View 1 (cartoon, protein in one colour):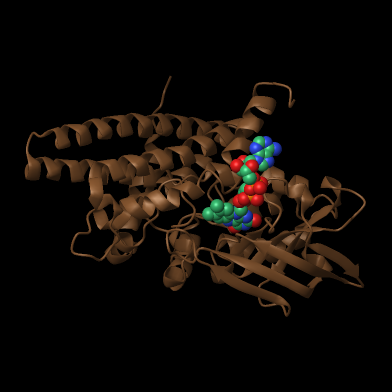
View 2: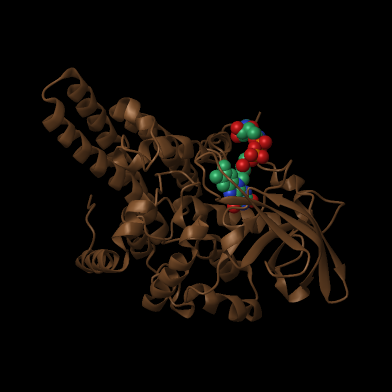
Length: 397
Ligand SMILES: Cc1cc2nc3c(=O)[nH]c(=O)nc-3n(C[C@H](O)[C@H](O)[C@H](O)COP(=O)(O)OP(=O)(O)OC[C@H]3O[C@@H](n4cnc5c(N)ncnc54)[C@H](O)[C@@H]3O)c2cc1C
């Protein structure tokens, strides 16, 4: 078995490393939290980093690094491995690398969108100018997306949208909504459609919500008689639920593997320094043993991540692996945050910017943020159901 990258992939990795070192400002790398497996500390969802992220995506687009995994027709080189290398290296530097436009919208458009629609939307996604947020969840609708209540009613050459979305990550810092709405009341899953809605359309109101880590990462969004051109309907009417399900596989593979490596490296360094400060004490030995366990967990994730990438790159179906990967890494994010707080002791509970702050206040923020991982993009319970039923063939019960 060969677990090595090719010479070309290694050279590419080096190129991405050099780019990250020169283009990612040190102060933003230090300031951004980006806890592994969490959703609430991604710099792309923070107003403070909006302008920087927009410019950074333009640079990635110019290099062709937003579309590497796609066919040439869409600016790519058909290499999911190279796309994953970009995700791994940039996320290590806490740099922006993937967002809804590249991980959800584009794969769906390429598969189900008309040529006309792709000609309109794909160029902006490929060059990094167009950004999206995902309008799926509603106040009473999360796991059971079939129960979406927001409606889109045909009126001449437009659809009129009414309803409310919630937990909409990044709606306040992006341009367009990837909206799931009800278009046929007589059917549940076969009565929903996907639309692209400009955030600036009259009747769209976006209100940020502050998350548990103190960051405005998500929003509630209201749609009051919002008129959407018919040409913004994605694929066929009433097929939206199936498009959303097929795209989740892509979202679940974007894990920011570099963030896991980074926390392990930083905590290892922290423990080395602790040894110098406290000597060969019980405190040091406990911290050292926690780091050993973390190293094993990150190594397991590494093998699993690259194997899943390899499967997708070689045309194998990997939807169960993508679910298992999402489950494993979001729960690993929780376990790493527990470990970080254990290693730091009471200092793990102190925010950034105080005289007692250690580890940049990351442990405490990570502890709070990591609970979002096993919920967002399909909760752990749902992943377990998928793995057990679709993967292992167990009855749904
Ligand atoms: C940080 C963060 C960012 C998010 N960003 C977005 C976003 O950008 N866009 C968006 O549309 N949504 C977003 N969400 C919402 C997310 O998709 C939902 O929270 C998620 O799908 C779960 O839905 P829910 O919260 O309504 O919980 P519910 O669906 O009400 O579930 C509650 C609990 O019951 C369990 N459960 C539900 N059904 C079953 C079942 N059939 N079998 C076993 N257990 C079950 C769940 O796993 C969960 O533990 C985000 C969530 C978070 C935490």
